[in-house]
Amino acid sequence: MKTPLLILLIIFCTISCKLDSDVDITLPTQKKYHIVEAILKTDKDMSLLLTQSNRMNDIVMLNFVWYAQASFIINNDTIPLTNYLIFDKENNTVINYLSKTPLPKFTNGDIKLLIIKDKDTITSTSHFIKPISIKSWTVNGVDINVTIPNIYDSADRFFRIETFIYHSKEKITSRYAQLYNLAKNNEELLNIHMKVGKIKRDSIKIIVSHITREHYEYLYSCNRAIDAYFDPFTVPTPIKTNVKGAMGIFTVVDEKYISLKSTYP
Image (cartoon, rainbow, N blue to C red; front, side, top):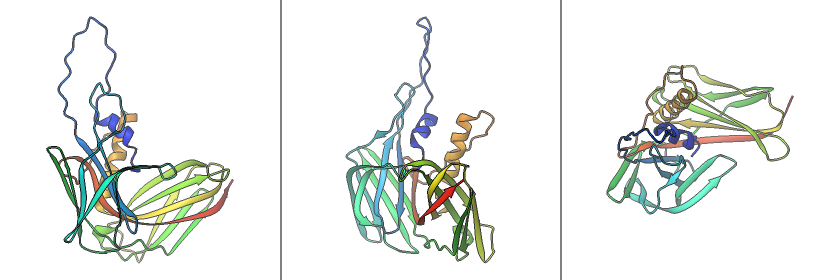
């Protein structure tokens, strides 16, 4: 979905090198595995992205997995998903399994994932979260400030901001994303700050999300892996996953967004 999956697929496999004809080398056997991104949003149709990893000599690309039996389970209700490929260019998301059932506005309880593909079974469990509550947000030059009432338990004080910058009508010129671990912040109000680049713009869209700890850890570890891939001096962390039988994330998100005119400089 919004994670740069193509870069992660590069990291998950070893890039092959062109060898001289007189060099004989045997590459280790590599097993492909499934990658799941199921990020469910309140009041939005439930969906997921199911792909397969690349091997050493494969062309690095998104290998979509089709014809799996995929479903979400809430209480005693099973919601099946069907193959439906969607590219959301504006929000930089991709899905290939969709249900026309929106995620309910529950604030507690669990939701389960079940995927069966040939002989593989993929499962995961996530929990519903409180909705995001915004007291105020301001944009001042390159600074974005959001104030959130602290109505969350310490185990649920994880947030994310995404900012899309526009110029010349609807064309997106840049995108920023930042994670916030506020588990130890017991203040009455939670203040979140993001700084964007000094890029010419005429409007801006801000998305503030309340996310789970598992989602935070997954995104944080993915970011560290990407940093380590491009910077050899960065120590990578293992990519965290809450999915059994595959890699990836299954989680619930509640988000609010605002679009406003914002000229810079």
